[in-house]
Image (cartoon, rainbow, N blue to C red; front, side, top):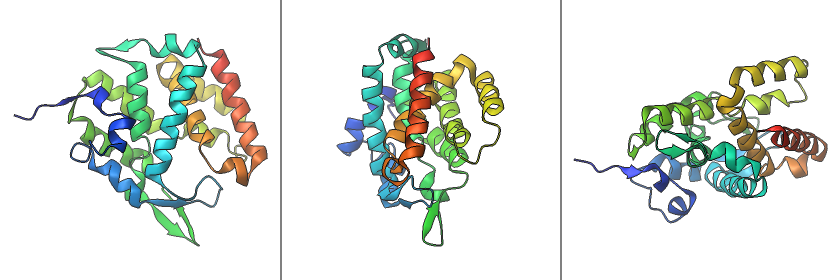
Length: 213
């Protein structure tokens, strides 16, 4: 009989220490997935390193914004949303290696969200996590690029699309998506490649986090 690990074991420290190579080998495979995106978000960095950077930013955000303590202190079955959000953050780009394609010297990962859900679901079976908790984590992974797309300069109907997204996710995972995409943006290369767009996105996330309750 396989003894499952507590879901809290799936954390940044244990990943860095190499303790999850048997339970989540797909995470370590991300060391081989090097991104160089045409939109300026990634500049020859591994998905693995980017994921660890996003985790660092996530930890800082949860400490800096005290009101988030109440939101993510709530439980879904046995685990807090904070623990499960961290798990979703660790796994949010796990589908990129299998979907990465190169075109004109740049990489992109079409459909990595859906692939990520499939891989994450497989990984989560090695841990003690309820069905409701699993659905919560997978829902975040499946939708983690929605706000990135919304804030794209190519989005013509921002206000309408924003209202639709907020209504769609409501208090279920909207706060989670705001925090995750904020952490993801902080650790993108957009700060250097397109400072104007970077500030626009960051200002949006900061305003929205202040509104969370």
